[in-house]
Every structure is written in structure tokens, then in C-alpha cells.
Image 1 (cartoon, rainbow, N blue to C red):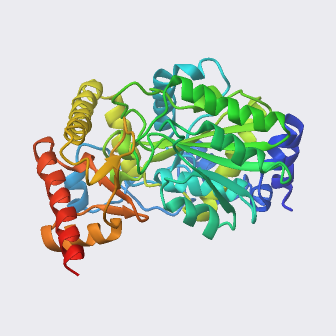
Image 2 (cartoon, rainbow, N blue to C red; image 1 turned 180 degrees about the vertical axis):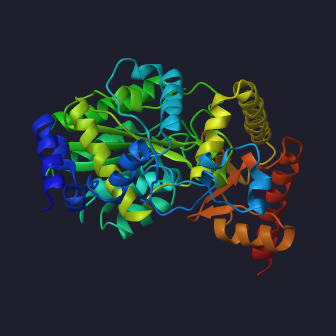
Length: 436
């Protein structure tokens, strides 16, 4: 094992042996090189005032070389802020700005010890980093039965972990904290579990309320007190899009200092929060008991980044930083929030009209981009294909009964027509079935 990796492992074992034990084999082996090209280039950037012949970019007239046809479309920005490599951990100013935003929007974090957000190539990359660091073959990754399908690729296919499902909703159609608790306690023989909490939930658009949040935290604490090391990943992709009486904070704040056997990891980003999906700017942030522990985790994270993408794109980091620092940012974001809230509320009012009750029910939703219909009479995939082929309407079929509808991408004035077409399609399928 590389001495740097060994040193990081020793730090983690000293600061919190449970966190050390949470690491995968790759997580134990990975490190960020301190004596390679990047570190030497960083030193040269600070000291080489005459000539800097280190890192692989081209310089012309004292600034990064660039093509006019590209710069003409980016003339608001200085070449140094878009063409140079961003550091592996991300643009420092952006990391600072995102941390400030995180603390303002999540008062539960308070004075708890958290690291500096590390920039990822959006949230999927952040989840992939966490999988690399903590998931080994056979490790349990606990997610609800209604989940984003990419978790399977990220944790099970790539890392060989075992997906463990529990029902998202209980009999009262609230978050099933007891199901989460049972799934966790079932891992006692393994002594380790990875939990992914995705709120607002994709595909249902559900976020727990304050009481449910406390129940989730209690379930995780119970597992820790039973001797299970729990890595909790809060996938906060749709953070901030809370439209009703749900939690308005990430559970990361409650989990940050819950128990020595609980490692809280926040994965979020500008992708959906700031409506910049194609920019691919996300963040991964750790909570911990000491600065030394956080530093070791961040060094290992940087090692994963260095070994995979080297660093994230600089231009999009600069664009996001510019937005966060703009005096117009808050107002413009609020305007978009109101549009999204209007679409969610209109969707609910249409569904609550009673007009479609014979064809479907719907799962509770109060946030995010999506909601799910629970079909009563037709197969979800058959309905999806019929809608697409006969009416030019795209939806997502999930299993036999569930149809995901993204109200986020439908203008409020078009939502009623959308659901009328879905209902019409149900009736058309029923008519064909009855004639056979």
C-alpha cells in the first residue's frame, strides 16, 4: 500500500475507527498524490514568476491560449477563469460560496463540524465517488422501493454491492421509517450498511415532514447503537423545491453528529437547484468528528477524482460562481421556484378533482420535479407506449402500476390537457381489451 494511503488510513483509524472500517478496499487504497505533477505545478504557479513550464496548458500573451471563435461567446469571462484546469477539488471560490449557501439553507447544521464541499461532475459523479470509497462486494445499500434506477448501476453493477429495498410509504402513505429501521437492523451480521436518502424523491416527489425526519434519524441511530456502521448519503438533487409542509432542510444537518458509527455525506449540486442541468456541477461534503478526519476523507475523494476525471470542467464552475455572487440570484431563483410550485399545485388540484379516480390514484407528493400515478386498470408500460405512439406524450413506466409524470417540464396551462390525454389513453386501452 502506498505510504500516503497508509497515513490517511491511520488518521481515520485514530480519529474514528468506525469510519475507517466503512471504507471499501478501494477506499483504503486510494490517496491523492502530493509529489506528482499537480502538486509541483501548484507550487510553480505560486513561485515561478519568470517561466512556468509545468502543467499541460498553452500560454499566449500572458493568458491561456484560446480560439477567438470560442472566446467571442464567452467574452464576459476572463480566459484564466474558463480555459485553465480547475483544481481536482474544484474552484476554491466556488467551494466557499457553496458552503456559505449550504449553511444558510440548512440551519440544522449549525456549528457541527463539516468539511468544505468538493466539486464533482454533478450528482451522479458524487454518488459514484461515495460508492468507490465505501461500497464493497456484498455490502448492503438500502434504498426505498421507489428509487432512481441509476443507484443500481452505481452501487450494484459497478461495485458489486447488494441493493436492499424497503417500501417507501407505510400503510398511512407516510414515509416508512419502520421499514428503513428493519432493513438496517437486518445488516447486523455484516456490521455495515450504506443508506441513500433521496428527498425530494425521484420518482415520487415526496419529502418527509419534520416528524418523519426525526423518525428516519432515530432509525439510523438505532442501527448505530446496535453496532452497525452506517454511511448515510443524502442525495439532495432536488433540494429547495419544497412546496408544502415538508422538511425544508436536508437531513444531513440532523445526521452530521448523530453517532460515531454514522458517517453523513451530503451530495448536492447546482444541476437542478440552479436549473443548469448541462453544466454538470455537483458537490460532495462530509461531516465528522475532527478536522483531521475530514481532511483524510477529502484527500481520498480527491484521489478518486484524480484517478477518474482528473478535475471537473472549469467554465461551468465559473458560471455557477458568477450566479451565486450575483445580487439578482435570489430573486431570479425565487421566480423559478414559484413557477415550479404552481405546476405542482396545479397537478394536485387536477388529480384531486375526482375526474380520474376510476383510472388511477396517486402517491403523495409535495416537492421536486415528479409525481407518480398508481394505475388501477391498465399496465404502466402498455399505457406509456400507447401515449407515445398514439398521442405523442412521453411518460415513464415504473413496474406494472406506476407511471411517473414530470410536471417540471410541462407549462402550468398544459397540465390539464396532459392528464386528460393520459385518461383518454387508459380508456382506449380498456376498450381494446374489452373487445378481445
